[in-house]
Length: 191
Image (cartoon, rainbow, N blue to C red; front, side, top):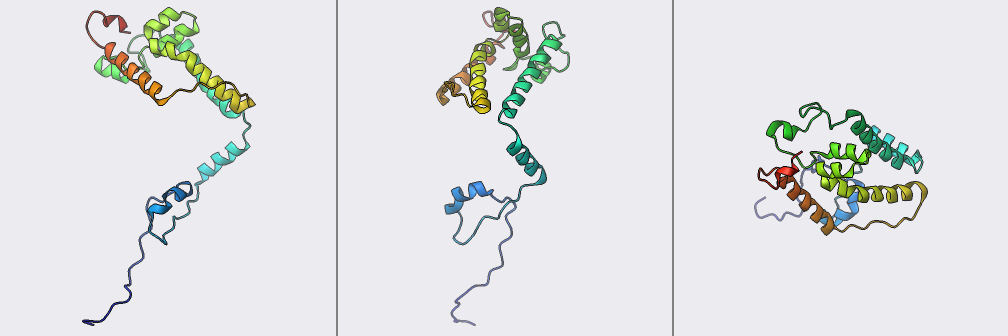
């Protein structure tokens, strides 16, 4: 016993990992795992298998049509609710504005969409200038994506760098702060 040389050590089996890694990430993390340890195979649940089967059987135009339907529902909501004549605390309302009285980054967006749909761009820009500014870019991004996905069109894609997206988000943040300032030039941004 004492002074004997130990050649092997019996260790208990490791407990199964409560958060197994999906097979797609298996190859990327293979070097990080100890030698001889393999990732457990993950079987998708019933709902995931159903969604994958539906996606495989769906025609190419189904996803762009669903996205267009969501955009159409948003436009229909703006047209039917007429946000320009509703009470400020009518439901549904902005929780931030209801609780703090401050305009959130999206405040005025529904009214701006209502004015855009009625071809009144100055009034739309008055309610949310950045929303109106971004609409042509968003429309082109959607048309080029949907045309490629549904019909195989090769329209020129709008390449937006991460710096441009970061700049736009910073501008949106500055706009959101400026529209809540209580001083003279900024009070015109209240909605």
